[in-house]
Image (cartoon, rainbow, N blue to C red):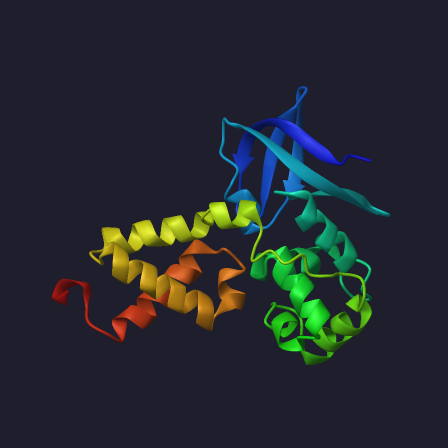
Length: 207
């Protein structure tokens, strides 16, 4: 079982990365938060979990062991596969998942794309007693990095004439109103939504 990778990052995509280890390019699927900490040409350590199916073996990568632990516990829930477990961690930090589980917060899980009210209720019931909050507000790795999609959206907005302050405020508002959209990390779609919201106010030229 491969529990971690330590090598040079050779490629970073929207939902995956390739890390060169001893001459092999290892493909790992990961959340936008984890991917934002990976940079092509630099060395990185990624904690991994391998999911084996009849027709595939897929590596999922995480910035720190706590994130991997939550991912693997989520996989124990009926109806939750690796993609959906990863989507949960794209919307919430590991500590947020622990708190939601402990408090029976179904609304937190229903904000994840692909999880409806019934699915959220099932998750809360099956996670009961499996994940306890650690008391940390968020993970160090996630708090220290800015998602790659956010950097690109902010750069595009400032390039179109909005100030850094207004761009930050607009992106934060969109992230709060549409968590399922930002979870996709699709820069083009997120930018369109932010621009649509900005368009309802003053134009860049009037600022």
